[in-house]
Image (cartoon, rainbow, N blue to C red):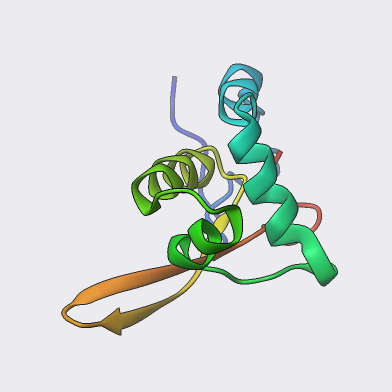
Length: 102
C-alpha cells in the first residue's frame, strides 16, 4: 500500500483526514481540558500561553502545561506564536480555525 500523495497544505490530495475518536475522547475527558478550551474560545477566540491560563484557572503551571500539551497533540488547540522570555520560549495557543480539527 502506498502513502497518500501530499498537497502543499499537508493533507492528502482529495482525501479528508480520519478522526481518531479515541484520542479525541481521551483528550477531552478531563474537566481542566474542557476549561482550557472554553477560556480559549471566549470573545471569539483568544491567544494565551500556559502561564496566562494557569493564572486564570488558578492552578500550577506544571498542571496547565501538561493539559495544554495533551490538547495540542490531539489537534484541539494550535500553536499561534512563540516569544523569547528570559532564556526560555513562551508558547501561545489558540483554537484551530473553524472547519479544521475534530
